[in-house]
Image (cartoon, rainbow, N blue to C red):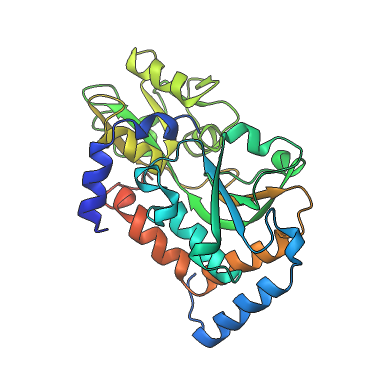
Length: 291
């Protein structure tokens, strides 16, 4: 799918924004990659998988763009769907041997047995979550962006200094909240909410001047738009805990090492960069960096 087609699809799918608001490339010899893939698949006993001979991958109960196009992960279209199939290939599974299941975001990060081999739905890797589940190494690191309403106090601001005196909002406990406080250091205490939906409602009601969201979510929220007459003010510099997303596995899963090795290979051979540019590049192109 071309960038123009992806932009058109995003703009035409208004329902996609709701859940999105809820939460070093090198070169590798192809023969070496094939060998690594075979080794990764052979290194794990078949009974380590939920279904022997199959790779069971979970995503959201509804999977939204740009991570999964048309709520159809089996198509391989969308950033996370494409990453999932690339990992499957590294593990030695063909597309026909991939089985998709659905979970809610919260149920997957809760302790206990899993119905999947790994889950992909924008899970930020945190020490707290690692107490209950395993993560692969990161497959993506999201920047944070500021979203505001046209004509409001943030309209026309082009640097961090201009944001300092605004009333800003974010979801409590999120990377967005940490980045807001450390990158902007506002003079007025930020308003923190239980969910991104609550923060968005506050922005719509004029209770705050702007909100901080991860950049892909910020883009979709303004293009659909979920927030009427909104725009992305700009991307914030990295600060605090990086918003790195990992594949989620059961705690102490025998697959964690092999899945991590697969992700590492995709990072080293440039595949992750290529998929990010293909599916997410349109979301960040043209958004200014705030300094």
